[in-house]
Amino acid sequence: MGLTNEHIKQRLTEKFGDQLINFEEPYGMLTFEAPRELNLKVLNFLYDDEELKFRFMTDLCAVHYPDNKGKELAVVYHLHNLVDNCRIRFKVFAPVEQPDVYTATGLFSAANWMERETYDFYGVNFVGHPNLKRILNVEEMDYFPLRKEFPLEDQSRVDKDDEMFGRG
Image 1 (tube, rainbow, N blue to C red):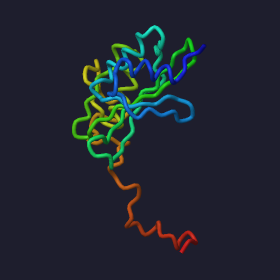
Image 2 (cartoon, helix red, strand yellow):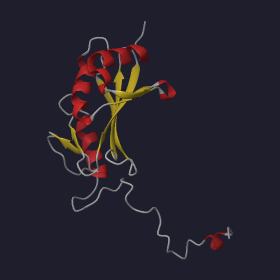
Image 3 (cartoon, rainbow, N blue to C red):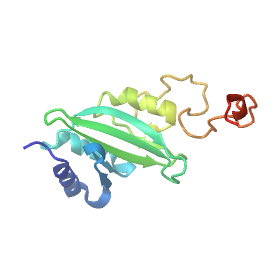
Image 4 (cartoon, rainbow, N blue to C red):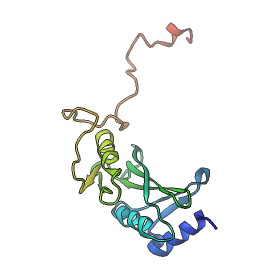
């Protein structure tokens, strides 16, 4: 018998109760949400539990939800159990005014560069990270380019008029 989403959810619920919410299975991948102050406890549990064995971090990224007040930034973890070939995703949310999330570098070496990239593009402050600085953008940047804080296009440009493209 392989590891099932129902069993993973049961183990998580036994450990964390109703602190973990929004369990879903888009495209068969178990997805849930944890409070940001529990991200390391959840990661450690998923890593250490002898039944679950999620010991490979596939990806760590962020998403900006500007209309989600108090939860504008999501940090998304993708974990893989290589023994049972099972993957899960979990999210923690942080306000854009205080985007502090505990670092996962002590558990996953791969989190080092992924967290630096996430900081560089979204401004998530990974508390305890050994070297949290920009990795792809220049240090002088005073903004985070993947946040949805700027209009996509300058609406005053006349060279973008629909009539010029036969749509007017």
